[in-house]
Length: 425
Image 1 (cartoon, one colour):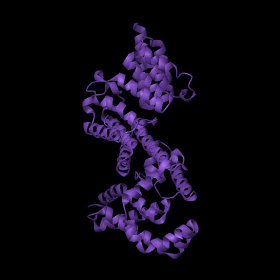
Image 2 (cartoon, helix red, strand yellow):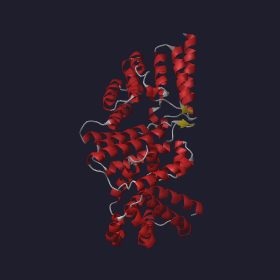
Image 3 (cartoon, rainbow, N blue to C red):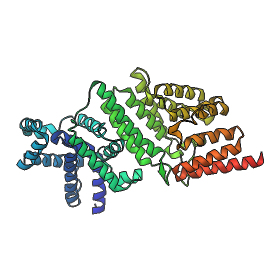
Image 4 (cartoon, rainbow, N blue to C red):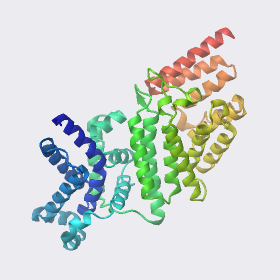
């Protein structure tokens, strides 16, 4: 194996194993930043040794053993222990007395519980949404600072600062490395799901840049969702979110043409949908429903996605059911964006005039004044009603508001079609 091959293998292994390493180490040292440093130390050791000795049979176990020894050495060194004592006070002192002799055994405890704690600490409410996303992708997604910066089109130093500040905030707030319970669990779980879906959505429909999608972000979010579903199998909304992401991810290959141009849902070649992901999504939705109780927002959105997935052709889509599901979603989670989506469903089920009435009710909504999809939807509905001049103006306005180059090109193309329709009418 060449050094290049070895480095590629090491990076791939580390990306898979790093969440487990950091989770186990955080339980030992009670500091997520320090745990990440120790995991990085293990990575450096692998980069030094594996190109010469070869990749071990169980590289994940090798990394864990190396990181474990570094953690034990660290906690046994007097100055570092004293510093940790100063930082963490009597709690760590007591922990040191009782846990130090059993460190090796302790780090081999149930890794699943550690991962779950790491999920909750990465999405803690003391952090801003941007910080939660960056820290989650860093600690659980195994992405580098450069990769996160590239994915969200922000400068790398900005992401680096967010991660540093996030770790410092967690340390200063002395956020416990534990899974919340009772009402706090529901609240914190909601934040975790929000972060994961935010990551997925940025991959599914990029807010800015030259590409309409960033599939790698979808894959990272889906992987995090699947891990979470294994860790908390009794939470229906977790399965609902996984179902939603699985079904939406099934369309990724069909969402763009050969040149990267967007292809809208009804125009997609459904033979290109990934039916394995659809089956996984429908199974996850069934698990959410089997757990009982009222559907939450993610399960409802998954049910909407399932309506599209079950239709063999665009014409077979059950739009009346989709409109009803959006109605239930609006009741559960009032939002102008959800209402705008309901307008589209209503138009497909009951005609463009009915949909336009719903969309027009949103014109005075302050939060949608700079949102490109409101004029986009209105432009589409006006075109269907034969109002081509108004439709063209709305689509051009939508194009001026979007920050995504591919989407802008599509909107301008539709506006030009309206201009041609106006000329021939």
